[in-house]
Image 1: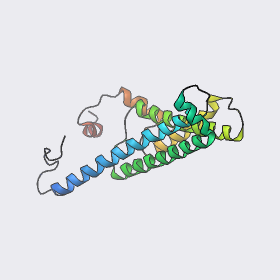
Image 2 (image 1 turned 135 degrees about the vertical axis):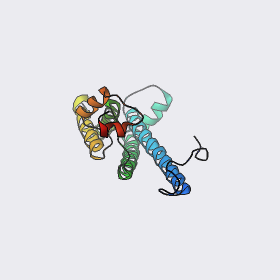
Image 3 (image 1 turned 30 degrees about the vertical axis):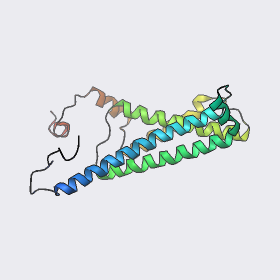
Image 4 (image 1 turned 60 degrees about the vertical axis):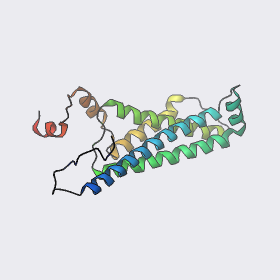
Length: 183
């Protein structure tokens, strides 16, 4: 919805001017867009690092494979940098007081992203040292834990029990008021 079509959120005479509201809206939209792009690049960079490591007959994968561990390490660096940008924007949204996502999907998304990024980094380190990665579960566990810890620390995801409770709770448009009044 274009911001020119929107009416003021607050009554006249209360709060900032319409121009300030629109500027804040534009800034938030830009930050959300940057955060989303950073998350996608982080996970894609991890996936590309994994593509560089295994054997394959496809021409693009074969070309990336010829670069080997160094190309995979480059994708890991891109992935980690994008994850850092994503976390920076999450901290910005926390500072703005935006509510966290509710439910299990956000919790699982953070853990999945952490597991994929962590697996790519560990697989690349093992390949560069000439070691064989023998346990997928052990290689993703640190990523699961770190992602869940960061998500809770930045108030972007609930803990597991709260996420399950959020899934069962009925939400409405007036959720904040419902939370206060118990309705």
